[in-house]
Length: 187
Picture 1: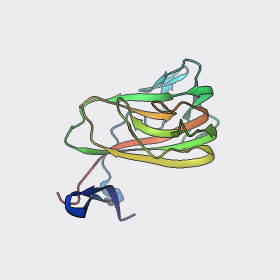
Picture 2: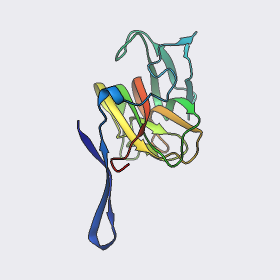
Picture 3: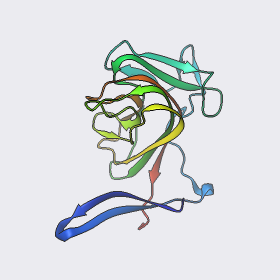
């Protein structure tokens, strides 16, 4: 990937606006701003820096060793009844004028969406409606990404099964998340 076009939108007088993200060479990759992004560290049943959170307390959260993208661990969320459940991490010190990219790898099993609940597995920014494309059904590891500008310097991010007003059933695994600042091609 050399570049990516994001935030395409219509502007006045029939014009179109968009952002061009130039992929940096791998040697110049910015540091990942998430703590424990691959869920490798932790104690007991909880990975360090991550917390389970759900709309309905019936969700089952696991720190997994059997299913993983890379390394030795991942996390999973199971919902036998419709739910919006997520593993969350609060990140502080973000610049509200900076654009960031949140990415993560997800795997799904029987994630059922409906016309009224269209968002299955995703990565998202809590407290609003910012999320990656929805993943549903049964699928092997797929990367999900979202580009956003935080409204506050302290922001909570999630790897999620379901969403606000989109409660779903199924199981999702998450692994290898990253949060990096996006540099503008025009800087």
